[in-house]
Each structure stands twice: as C-alpha cells, then as structure tokens.
Image (cartoon, rainbow, N blue to C red):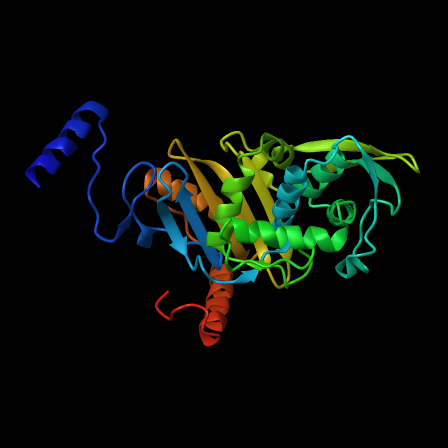
Length: 312
C-alpha cells in the first residue's frame, strides 16, 4: 500500500494530476471513474478500451434488442469481405426485402450506381434501398447474403445476434451492445469502412435514368472537430429507439462505444458526449427526465421478460 501511494505521489509531482483509488470504480482510459457519477438515457451502453479490451462502462450490455440500421455495418462488412468489383454498376432492387414496402426513398428503382457509391450511401446516410440492392447483387443472391451476415456474426462470436434482412427495418434484426462491440472491432480493420462511414456529405450520380442526389451523414458527431471518429453507424426504428455505434478516442485511447435504445432524436449523441466527458473528467451532465422515464419503462419491460436482473 505504501509503495502504491509513493507511486501515486510521483505521478502527482510530475503531472500535477492525482489519481485517487475509488471503490467500485471502472478502469478507464485515464483514471478510475466512479460509474455512479454517470447518468445516461439509453437502454443499453457499452464502452471498451480497444488496447486492453477492458470494459470501461456497461449498462445492460447483454440485453437483446432490435438494432435498426446499425445492421448496415454488418451489411458493409460482408460486402467488403466478398471482394466484389466496387466499380461495377448495380441496379437498385428491393424486390427481396418485404420490409421496404411503403418506405420512402429518393433513390429510383432500377437506376444504377457503382457498388462503392451504393455502399457509401447505405453506410453514411443509411439509405435503405442501397443496402437492399447490395444484398440483391451478392454472389448467390439475397438469401446467400443474409446467410453470410449470420455466418459472420457467428464467426465473430456474436452469439446473441440474428439478421433477417440487410437494412435494419425489421425488428427481428437483433443484437446486444456486447456483440456490436465485436462488430466494431472487425469493421475497424477495413480502411474503406472507416472512410465511408465517416464521410460527412457527398453527391452521387445515378444512371438509367441520369440524376444526382446529395446525401449527409446521419451521425452529427462527424461534423464536430472535437470528435475523432474512425467508424460510425446510427439507427432508428420505433421498436429499436435511437442507436449509435462508434470507434473513437476517449482519454487519448481508442475505444468502441455502443449506445442502444435511446429516447429522442439527439439523446444517443448526448449520451455519447456524457460518456466521453465522464471518461475524461469524471463528470457528467444531467439527463432529461422524459428520457429517464423512457429508460425506466424499457428496463421494467426487460425485467418482466426476465432479460435483465432487477438490480441493474
């Protein structure tokens, strides 16, 4: 104990920062933090240090929930690993995705776009028709693509994950925060996925017929200079709530962050900011009462279903 205190005093002498031990604290990227000081509005969250694989913060990380368009990150991973020609023009086809019926899109059916641009707008702007089209033009077709998504999930050890279609529109596309952390690590290995998911905005030119559409990233954090985001994907459906997954930096260390089932259009972004502030300063801002009420109601539902322990 004396040696430990001596080392701490040296750290203080050279850095001016005193790292105090805390009971029931999570190991973080900079200093021990008391998890009771962090309040978030999302139903599930998991923050992992990518260098040590240590969990920094966890809240209901193993609850199985719909993941909405976060599904498209697996869609992108399967496409990249298939090594198809990214310059090949493919047509917009949603015939095999019944979830697309009645869903609005500016993208015209049967028009064509290079596979790379189709993947770009599926990932950065969460364009559902693009994701469905990528699956349609996969070797072996749509059914083979869904099988590949689930096979990749199994290979990554995502034991609580299942996909039935490539867009995330189906509530039967389910996963957990812990499983999605594994997906983030796998996606981070491919520079093209980092580039495409973090593109802020773009215009793409379709043919047959010829037209141009502009697209913006659905993750508002990529536009903020104080965020260093390497991989990102958002998602929203009514059953899934608002979702956000990131590979980023906190406390000068690379981390994976998964936020699922948040109430409100900006709550998942606010939770990401609260978590980063807590990691780097030990402090966190308050959560709106309406968001906390939403979270409490969802937690109660999960407890009644036996999904999470009553103590969580």
